[in-house]
Image (cartoon, rainbow, N blue to C red; front, top):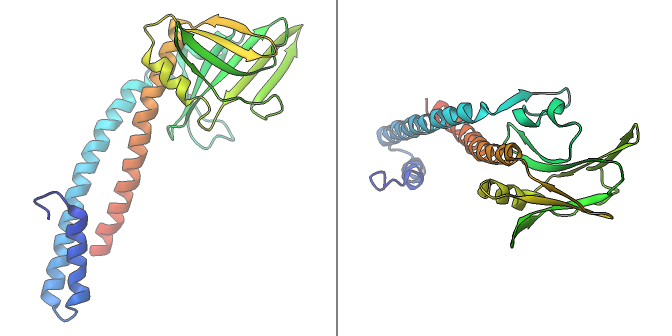
Length: 229
């Protein structure tokens, strides 16, 4: 079973020895030692994979600044070109990412008149992708006003912007446009650095999710090694 790479069946087979032959003390001990060797070998492999993913995280993180607010559960990754100082007075699509790998978009409108928008569509010619709708009364649909200027920010959380994120990440070479969909329409051309921010965040999100999954597997295996001691 091990030679075929099936460690799960190998461990199940070793576990069955104690149940089927409770008096075979020597064989039960040998089975325990073999299980430990299997777990340790898996740990070595998984830790090597994690080291590789850590290198990727470090490389991709160079495109972001990190912060963690008082109420944030995870570290937040903020694209350097989408910081508040650079973006407070423009209409654009913003990407949000945290250390768990969770990613979503928000549409930020800045102008003289209310749009009351609830969704966005990103397109180039016949190619397009659209977010799900976030109603005006939703907590993720924000409005504010200052010195006769209107601000609207709609956050497309919980998968509502997944299709658009992937679409932008796969088409950064195109001259993508976006339309804010509401009681009024508003059109923008996506800046190159905004498209790159989405792609960088998408790539980092995939790596973070893979790394976090590995961390859980490693923790579980470490517990199993301790049990066999």
